[in-house]
Length: 191
Image 1: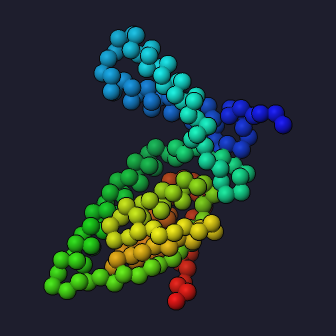
Image 2: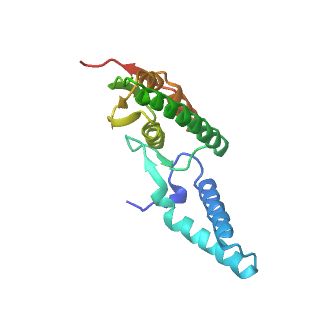
Image 3: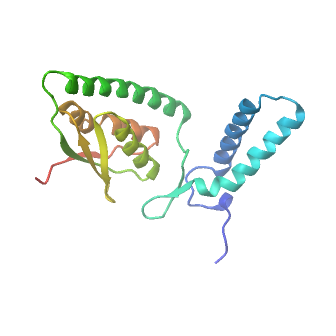
């Protein structure tokens, strides 16, 4: 079997050259910001370092989907959508912090811990990773498990946290971020 180069791999979703160019530009910009030097020598060093680093690390930044039929670039999302998602997530963190603060600082503890389940299927494994980490990052919720068939088990500290996880809002945002079809359903508890 002939070894296939990254640039010719037909399993990669999107253009490898576009992904590599974007990564090299980001690395070069990072180099320029950190070095603060604009002399020709330093610019050339920055370009060479960015290109070599991109070439060496690019295969490590490809993740296969569950059945191995496709490979996705880990940074294969729209930058404007990621910026919008970041600010939306920061707002959700503020709201969740307030919810947990109010639930835990009153005369009575107003907590109602429970495990909730939902199914979110995405072909791109990075969408699943971002969703699970976003849920865990949000105060009052922890992703306990994600099964192979896309069932997420979430521990929610309050009724509001459970409702927020089960409303599908975050799942819709993540699906949109990665260009995935929105495939979400609440899974009834087995208890």
